[in-house]
Structures are given as C-alpha cells and as structure tokens.
Length: 366
Image 1 (cartoon, rainbow, N blue to C red):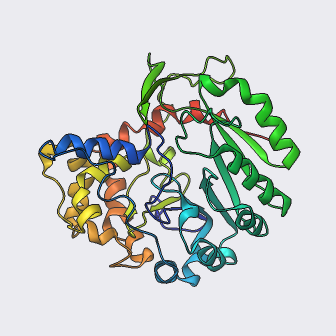
Image 2: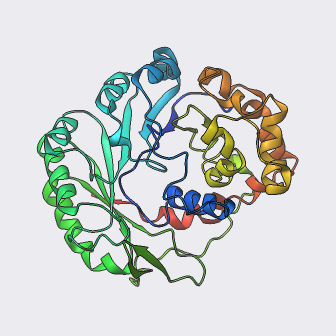
C-alpha cells in the first residue's frame, strides 16, 4: 500500500503576491504576457503585463487563515517564499508574515533578486533566521542583461547589510556568457560576507540553442549560453526508475506549492500550462477551465481529474483548509492511481525525470 501524500516534514513553496519590479526576459511573467497578447490579436495594442499580474499581495490575515499553527507545527519542515511569478520582498507585510511563521517552521527561506527595499530593511531581516537565496546575474553595474531593471549597487549594499546583521544566505549566480568571467568575483564577494555561493547555468538553453535576442527599452542584444567547461548542463536524460513516486517533487521532496490566490498547484513543472488552462480563474476568479481541445494531454491527465472532484476551487485555500485540499481525492489517490495504470503521460514524461540529475550537480560552494 502506497503512503499518503500528506504526512510530515513537508516543503511549502508559497508565493506572497504577483508583483515584481524586474523584467527578466524568459520568466513566467513575460511568457504569460506574450501568450496573452498572442491569444488576443484584436487588442488595439499589446498589453505590457498579463492582466493577472501586479494585482495581489497576500495579507497577514490570509496567512493566519490558510496556515493554522497546529498544522504548520505538525506537518511542515521548510517554508520558502517563492519567486517564480513575483518578488516576495515587495509584499508590504513581509516582516509581519515572517514573524508569524518564525516559530512555527524549523527552516524558512526566500527566493529574491535583492533589488528592493533599503539597507535598514535588509539589516533587520538579517536578525531573523530566514535564509535568502539571492538570484542575480552580475556584480558589475551595467551588466544586468538578464535581470533587467536590477540595481546592482543596491543589491550588493542590501546583501552586505543583511550579512552585517549576522544573516546567513546564499548568492546564486545565474550563469550566461556575459557574466561567466565574474565567477571569481562572486566567490570573493560571498567569502568576504560569509554567505554561501551557488552557480546555476541558465535554463534558457537546451538542445542546440545557444543564444536568443532580447529587446529592452529599444535596445536589442543577444544573451548567450555560458562557454565554461565546468558549468554546462547535461542533455536531458531519463532516470532509471520510471515511477513518478521515485522522482516527483510532490512525493519525493514532499513539496506543496501554493499560489498567492490560495490555490494549491498540482505540480511544479506544469505551472505555465496549468495557469493557461485555468487562466480565467487566475485572472477573473472564473473556475471554468479552457476546453479540452486547448491542451488535450493536460486536460486528460490533470484537469479532468480536478473537475471530477468538483473543480478548481477544491484546491483553493479560500474554500478549504490545507488539510482538506491535501486529503482530497486528487491528492489522496487519484493522481497516484494514474501513475500506477500508466495513463498519465504528463507525469510519466516529467521534466524532472528527464533532467533533474543534470541540474543537481551545481550545488552550493561554501
């Protein structure tokens, strides 16, 4: 008998809003904006941001409602304020939310680009136990070719202020050709401040793709894959065990992904596709998914199963407790049943299965 998905020592990835002050060219925000404009050719002019974006900050009141103390103490080992579609530190109640979780969860992290707030704010953050992951692409002002809109001097000052207060985190270098010469400088910067250092080759290049063009404020330039020998991503490959229970983040890492609207995502590797299928729910609170013809595979593998148990609101913390969501039929047995009978091609061909091991070799360097 397989173990239940809901257990203990879970890893929560939680978006604190959908605001960001940068314009990274291949992030979720940019991708969904481009797709929205493609699907709405009748607009007088393209929108600069998807209409769902820059509308929501999670409130402290919502946090207290969605994450009861007893549940957090019993079930959760790690909480990460996620940066997949937002910059968490822009939330005006960030410190109050952090204080609520501080004694409930053993480990708290935040994914950030660091180009927010001021040195005093980051100094105060350094007095807490939070572990930030500063994801940046340069230490050289003017070289922010991927993190468009970042203020490099501000970022360095903020990290120094955080470290001066005794804070411990990691600086993650997103590696391209334009910044590969800075690896040594990054190491020295992190060593001087007592921070961990991580190198992650950009995910933007796969197969034969080695570059792409970016247009920013009328300026067009090319972002290129790094050419170092030591930091190349391997070609995607399948792992030895084709059972999703052996590689799915939901079961292996016990990851629970929660969006800023309170929705518990079914999977971390189909966020874009899932968002598109339920775009009306994210944008207008309309729970009706797009028709099956829009994405037949995803509809059959994931969406139909959610609809059969009552629709997207059955995964929403605005309508149910987190305990109820994670013990609903979808998470309790339906998803894993579809793995066992081999019908769920979305999961059986997961990107994690194909490429996770090739990414994991780029771990932390203390």
